[in-house]
Image 1 (cartoon, one colour):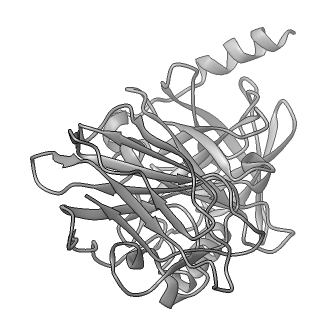
Image 2: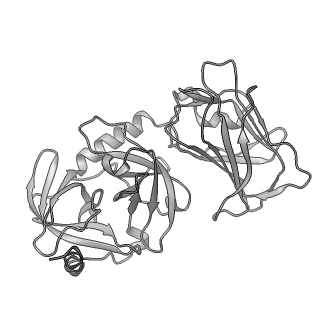
Image 3: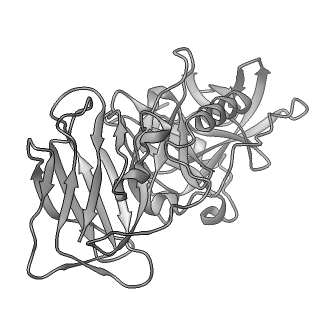
Length: 349
């Protein structure tokens, strides 16, 4: 039997959600090595994260996410901060993808030993939600073993979540044959994610949204998202728009900082200045790209691209006619030295 035949047979056994847009938190993932898998979106303290196996995250921190239909795509920064034997990673999702994020893993309940079946959820190539029924063969301390009696386990199922009555109970990490899959129990996934996010609560999540800042020489702007870890609680990204303090972070690839103009009107952006300290113990950004969009959603276009000066000043220079902006993205591609990187302030004028 060919792989195509096995896949077609598996389609017959699928069970779809009644309301995929409202309920589906499953996302398809493509990592930096071109490998594919799945993950599960969940919300924690106001921010959106994606749980996935470590091997789906791959070697590089940047991954590509795709939601259920109507498909929304985006990139995310993924981390693997857990103990080496745990096949688990977590990413922070931003933008349009994050707008589809509604579920929570904070009070996740485990699999019911009284029930002998469950459904593995995944996405078809065009974003359709599909569920493959599996038979629970064994419930161990860390893992759930499941068999497929009708159909086969399609390729790319690592990271697909196991459900009972629309409640996630496990995450697929291995399929050693076409009719068997192993899942990490949801209790183990949730415990590690909640502990790490709680310990690093200042990294991405905030109990309340940061208030917009009206800079002395610029317009009102708000920090929307920063997909990188600060080195400590006093060096958080909220310092970027202040005249005091420094945002110090440990990069693991391209660092993207996103800002938005609050309200319903765009602002005229004529100049961007970024300041770092050449005499500090941390490195300074080197190659930087600033992109903008005049709408709340949609494609960003380059406003400026180049390198920060050795004096710790990046100044795009004033423009006679401003660019209408609703969103601004500052991407750091490299630094002038290894180790933590620091930015004292970003000013939008």
